[in-house]
Length: 250
Image (cartoon, rainbow, N blue to C red; front, side, top):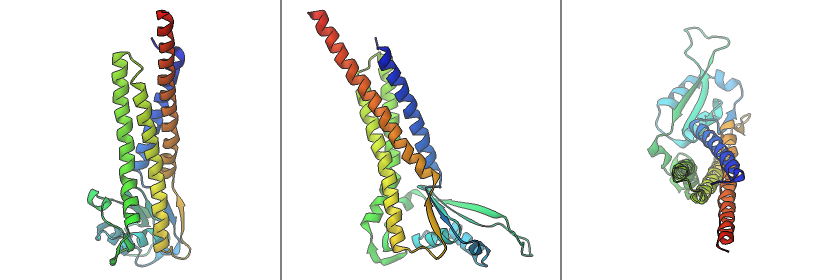
């Protein structure tokens, strides 16, 4: 039999865990982790359409797609990179062309490609720090979601067995998931900072954090609060059960 206090803690922890999972899943699947704001004249340039086509169909090169992101209001995510450019125009030049967003996904092999000390220049040697930051920002959210799914399976088994003891493991897994989510954000921010040190932004171009990154950042404390509730419920219930058993024996 579970005390009402512990049951309430488990319900609140489950709701927080669900919210954190949704936030992190949305963050991983969207491309607004970092966004650039380019001067309006960049989109009116004659080679804007060429840059867009090369961005979509050209070979994968960090310097090439980074320069395009800088110039065409680009947005960057864990799995996506997007730019804004004028859409297909008629034979005459439109005074105010409609801006179209074009996105390209990072393939799985591209996620594990090495980064170089000078982006695009393979002769400068591999930048191990940026390489592993990039790989960690891709792997850590997947590990975090895996921990939450595993903890959910353990929680279902605990309900079927009518035992609160496995809740301790659920809390530990949520704590690890929260640390992985926080690590994802830290790796992404550190990687972007290092990228901007070797790739100077053009004049008039500003960069800012996007809402996808904030969703991932919010998911981390939610998972940690859920972990605290699960751990408290498991520990307090165990102590209470031990006291009751000792009382009955006495």
